[in-house]
Image (cartoon, rainbow, N blue to C red; front, side):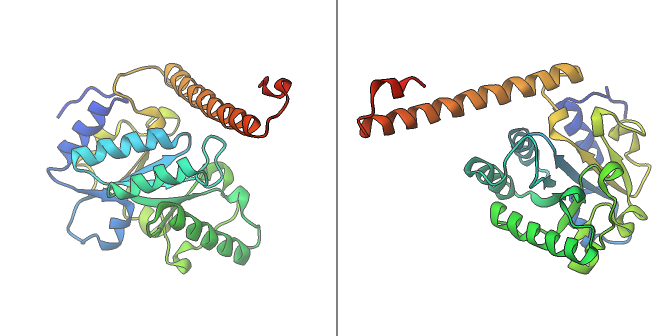
Length: 253
């Protein structure tokens, strides 16, 4: 079937609905239960930029009857999974029937293999607390640049999306940088028995737009959120100063 290839929600779901006719589609953890003669698509999202975008994708997938794995960074430059809001959003994604996985960054791990394994275990325990779910899958962040240490996650009973057992049996495609290296995901349906599809929620939208416009929209949304948070903080400080009968000049915030 011929589709118009773009980064819209419409194309994403028309591809999955077409694939559903011959594939079992689900989260990465389904790899552990896959049957020899089954055809599978393992859906995965690396949450590099925004929990809000991740939640929107999670809600859309749930609405269309799909579940997937959302890999969360505990050390993100753009969002805070430890915040009240962050925990709330991640827990919500899990409650929609999606898997939560650890998106680990080797730059935050010890060069000592044994210590790095302990750090991974601690990060998984933390993410389980944040998400109120069991975490059994992990994926490295920017593996081409950061994976200067190799961790055998199988020893920790953790499924690694970049592990040999997956990569040898599952065809891997990614939209990193909003660019499909080997052609749009729709072009691979029917060609392989097992496919791992990695997408990043930041790149997908209702309407087709350029990378620049998509990033500009992200900046606008984050700026609006920051202004709102600062506004709430100002109100809290003003209330506190009023209760303390502080001098009037202190109210100039």
